[in-house]
Length: 316
Ligand code: CUA
Image (cartoon, rainbow, N blue to C red):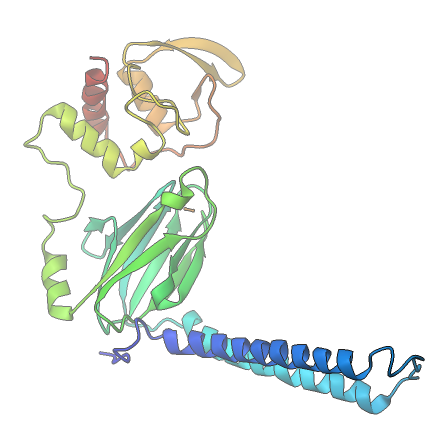
């Protein structure tokens, strides 16, 4: 159990804000000081008082002063920056882990019990370690209120940690330009009292994107698409996004590029499955290769069948 100052959203706020205020203070001091000095000199050494300029030939004393003072100032800034940053690199041994997954263009959070959510839920005064996973391109996870920000790099194991100090809701952004809908890649953090969080995490029926088997097969198919973020890139109304729209493709004769060969394929279950598991095998004409990763292991063969049922409804 930790006790973060309840005035502060996380344990890093004080350190980061101190460094910020020190740098801001020094900057304001020099902005005001230099401006005043400049105005005084303009007046004091104006042309009608000093018509002839004098040449000064160096001064060791002055050179030492204007080297040592800035050196001390930047070291002071470095010290406060370093003191605020260093604890961010040392997560505690004992902490709750949450897997933070970023893909174009959605965040997902997976908890130790398998629960998955679109926004982050954490208990107050407990350290949380986010295991950062980027599935496609560079993203960056930023929680301004907590003063934490870290790049998410595909194939690299990175972590971020913090202890929330205030209950409430905070913004969570992607701060690495990651393509067309980067600016819509926003989410939130909800900080809850421990008891409330414990009850929430146990309840695996709420929030977690499960497939509701009460629904029709086509509607379940739509849920699979939504839960996997497919419709961020593939519209269902015919509009063009990063990938081809799903509207009216079922049974359609589709020109594609396979390797270096152009051919026409029929959109059937086999093609849909191949497009999900090996998306760069057949690239639809007019679209680019390499923008989609395989969803093998994330979308099961049963779920592919549900997606097919949904695609059929888009032909009506
Ligand atoms: Cu993800 Cu910007």
